[in-house]
Image 1: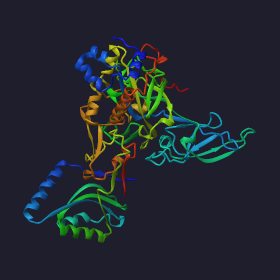
Image 2: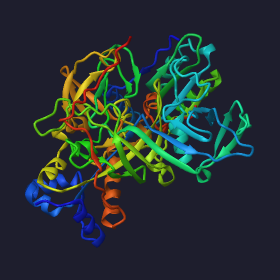
Image 3: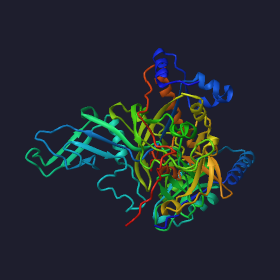
Length: 166
Length: 396
């Protein structure tokens, strides 16, 4: 079991990406869209430079939020992909053609508030501040927009309040 | 200004009682001084909600026809202890299912066990009961496989031989791999620090020398009424304390008991600790009668005055080695970060302060409405004048 899991969290990277996409939007004169998705790669194609093709051939900005890629194992990337609408659609078709499954991120992680007791055990574990605590009330909340599906909270939550559905 | 519990109960019955929570008394003492606060306030409510191992239920499931002397019992495939009588059963919160791989297939998930069954029983769910026996003339049956429900049980009692720890360690990990402990997931190299106490709301931290909390004290237990029946196991009053008497490491504990049928699953939850096991989270609220200024002063304790020790759970704790990496207070812990070895370490709780706050408020309302009277302890808990010393095992 040599699986290596990498959680990427870099404010600098985010800021840089944000600026870059803003400039792109301003100068291209076309509408930029971006979405966060979970890409699952069959093990047969996991060694191909697919992300590179997405960037070079479709002119997309790919921000890897979390990755688990090993030889001869099904791979998983959580990415934010931005670009022109048509090119993004082309990139997605390219991925589907290779057999990569694409799932929107927000649907995959569920926080069951009724199960949460607001103990805050998840707070230091969550790398993206998806789970955060209001220090006045000492109550936990979940912002699915920030989630990078790293799965660390699943092991940290003693009340099984978080579920990942893939 | 000296009051008695009997006088306070009279005020409760007349609807004149003044009750505040252990948070509210802090501001009151700050504003009016302890003398005036002790005069005005009759009761301070304290509370805690967190995983409390050493919790169990016992119940009597009634005789079948023909009768069985249950020798071994399983509840939803989780072993329960039946070596008490014929149809009395004892289920521990940390028991895991019969064929659970536990940590033999690392990392054990421990999604289900005794604590979860207790929660399900309380929630009114049917539980499968299997029993086997050797058969006797008076109890001829050898096998039983049926369903039980809390409503049909003769007695169902929550009994916790050690709850409500007076202060607790802060757990960190100095090693270079993730460790999975009863204090939660601990990231390597001081990646996080987990604590487990309600601090300024916690019962025994508001009565540090056990002046009012003792055997027979009536309490809020899991949403119902329960009692303190003894000091808890590992009760250890003689630890280092601050000049205000607050222990600086785990000290006193309580054994509590109450009717499981009164309990609400909101305040009793099964707990799964990855790589460690299962247990039960219990909500407890304890009223402190303000009999004099000294007691009032104790209840005004603040998070920043309660200190505890940061312990390495990768080496020092499992090997039983002494040594604290740092002494921190609960104001720092609740701020979300502490400093250990010059490193800023993010903190996480296991005890829910939000739930403790709710319980303190509920108990306040019960007393205010005259639904809950205080009791006089029939015996005090052993305190700092006792000869108790916590002993480690001497292997022979």
